[in-house]
Image (cartoon, rainbow, N blue to C red):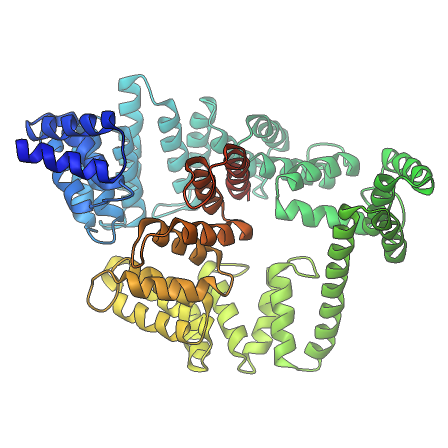
Amino acid sequence: MQVLKKTLVYKFVVLGLSASLVISTMASEISAAQGNAEAQYEMGLSYNYSETQQDEGKAIEWYKKAAAQGHIEAMTNLGKIYKTSYDYENLSEAIEWYQKAAQLGDIDAHLIIARMHLTGEGVSQDSNKAIEWYQKAIQEAENQQSDGDKSQQARNAIGTIYFEGTGVRQDTGKAIEWYQKAAAQGDAEAKLNLASIYRGSDKLYQNYGKAFELFQENVNQEYSSDAAAYNLGLMYYNGEGVSKNNNKARQWFQKAADSYHSDARLKLKSMYSNGEAVDKESVQMFNEYQIAAKQGDSDAQIALGLMYYKGEAIKKNYNKAIEWLKKASNQGSSEAKYYIEDIYAAEALTKKFEKYELLAKQGDSEAQKEIGLMYDRGNGVDKDKAKAIEWYQKAVDQGNAEAQNNLGVMYRNAEGVKEDKVKASLLFQKAAAQGDPEAQKNIGLSYEHTNLSNRDYTKALEWYQKSANQGHSEGQYILAGFYHDAFNSNGHKDYVKAVEWYEKAANQGHGGAALDLGDMYYKGDGVRQDYFKAFEWYEKSANIGYAQAQANISNMYSKGLGVRKDSGKAEKMSRKAIHKSSESRIK
């Protein structure tokens, strides 16, 4: 025991931890060794999530000791490791541990088992068994008189199985019954699903009044409030159950657009272009801005310029827009300068589209591919997946490799077309045969992310290597991840090669690679630990907009690692990270 204590003290002093933490950890390990289930579970957690000495094998060892004594959280954590770990994936064992936890009343375990039956993960796909497990979760929640959110989640999931006809006969009536049960408990997602059915085209269930009411409730609950606001805008725009009112439609579209709803933004753009978004208030605002702008008010000049550009309360006038924004810019307004740059960029895209459209109609395959890409992404033109497919197909018919890859992606992801992974694979193979690095990467993804029985990491690695060798940053990034997570030819982690490929990708502006490279310098994986370099790479990733990198920088400012300690900068960067994370969720 004396030797054990000395080893532990040395271990934690080297890490620079406080004496109290050393004593606490020592006590926990001693208690675990003496058979305390909670202490054994805590030891499992420490090995599972430690930044410095993560060891899933030891985590499993301790979790199993705790689980043998009936510790439910240890069982669910074992299930999670066996379900998600690269090194220890064993879906049959995952199911076994989740079932043990479920037998002891763990509701989360019921839900996970249900999802595994639904997706065929580790078991044969069986929607009826999934429903059975969801119903067990509901019953368990009722027995415990708790976890209302989880029983709502289960009811909503059953409703979706029936609505989509996933492995069962499609039955909208049953879907509504289950959605209603969840909605009655206040579940916002179920309300949104119900509202979508009531607003749908099926006359048997169509009920605009109920749809409108539920969408309004969703907006107030703030669950997918952007989607609810967008649908309310459509109902006012189309006169569905309410009097057609473009002004109210515009207000709801604006609310959705403010939460980054892309379709709402496109609808607003269309309304402004067609003069449908003008109201008396806008005309009055235009007149007031015009008076103030002529008197030299830079804010009014900016507002007036934007109204000319968008066609708000006045006919669109590009030249007038630039004229007023330049007046504000000449007074030192950086905001006006940014708007001018954005407008120039947007106009350049419009001219680019017109140029490519002319060439595409003349049969130029590269122009056809570019037109498809612009419709696909909504660059310089309203996003239109059907038109994107049409133009990609024209380029594919002429053997254009990039178009073959892009059309393959649309078939793989069911974007504007029914999912067809066989056709996607054929298109990827055609593009890859011509040396297209993006297609080579996509073939690698298909080998890596197919079902477990057909998964082939060796072939995936082969295709990622081909893509990376051509300088494709995403291929380099994924290849680095393979070496980092032991998916290489010998099945061992190779941090040195991981660093090499992360750096190549990061030097091309890949934010994810810069983030992971920062992690490796922070932890000293494959390189000498260097907080200064870690900070440098995190900063590059943060500047691209990665929330995790921003959070890491906040942590380093807070602790003074690789940079002078600065609580103000730590707080500022933390706010940025939180904002970016919530923005991503909204999108």
